[in-house]
Amino acid sequence: MRHKLFLLLGIMLLLASLASAQTTVHYFYGEGCSHCANVEDSRVLEKLGENVSLIQYQIYRNLENTTIFYNFCDKLGLSRYERGIPFVVIQCNGNLSYLLGDSQIINNLEDSVKTCEGMAGGNGLSPTHPSKYQLTIWSIIIGALIDSINPCAFAVLAFLLIGLLAVGSRKRMLRISFVYIIAVYITYFLAGLGIFKAIQSLTAVTRYIYLASGIIVLAAGVIEIKDFFWYGKGISLEIPKSLRPFVQKMAEQGTLPAAIIMGFLVSLFELPCTGGIYLAILTMMSINKSFALSYLLLYNLIFILPLIIITLIVYHGTSPEKIDKFRLKERRWMKLAAGLVLIALGLYILLF
Image 1 (tube, rainbow, N blue to C red):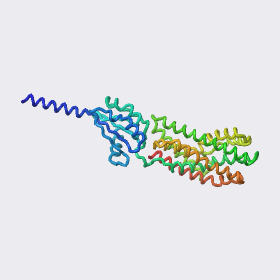
Image 2: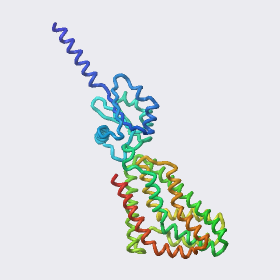
Image 3: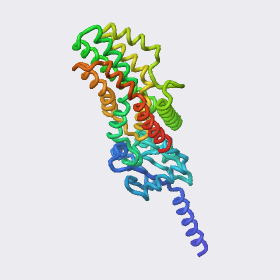
Image 4: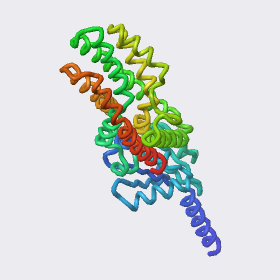
């Protein structure tokens, strides 16, 4: 009888130890999340062994599951910049590890469960809230519209139009001006694409990149508002005066190659002047994981829209000098509007 009791006790202890050693995989996903769909299509979750307990949490519009998600992120020490779905937490022998992003989960989940060790990852993430703080098409449009109403861009175009009208016909002015505007569009688009890719590639210091972007955008906003009250004093976001002789020389040539070169070089010099809102939008795309090539194409199309309108107005008889006088008269208010938007975007990046 005593032997049977010891045997029963041993079996119970063995079962208890096996139960305690069981690995639990917590999988967080969202309905409609494309990266989560990649995980499901890979069937990697179905390949987990019998000793692995799989618990799945759909977090979109589910407060309870979202709270569990944030609790795990807090325990793992993940900052708000490092959180997203799909997300796997591996609970093994009292220890927690995690995999973040579809590529890390698909390629490493089986081995991570066996070794009880996860990997940080980060590629292939969707936002934890599909609507909250998400970058929408309207925020792209509004940001681009405010960015486009910029005295720097107007000044360069007015200078070009004055030079072209002095040496040629209005048809020639129209043709060369549109070539210049297209060159600006391509340059800004490529610059934006490069900045976004750079932000995305620096995954090891993502948090610091976001913080730096937020601070830069805030500083640009303060400078713009300063110019509303004290224009010409201290630092201003405008094209260097040393560049104006070059622009005049290119404008006087009045050739298509000169317009292309001027559009490219002037755009690069213009970026510190007009790029604050652009940088903010690109950073927000990265934060929200909502980047799309169409967003950049649309943003830059809206950015050059006022340049197209001004060119057509001049073509139909309005003098570029009159437009330049309007720019000088309203310059302070343009800077104030840009400054307020930059401060709002900077706070968004830093606080959300």
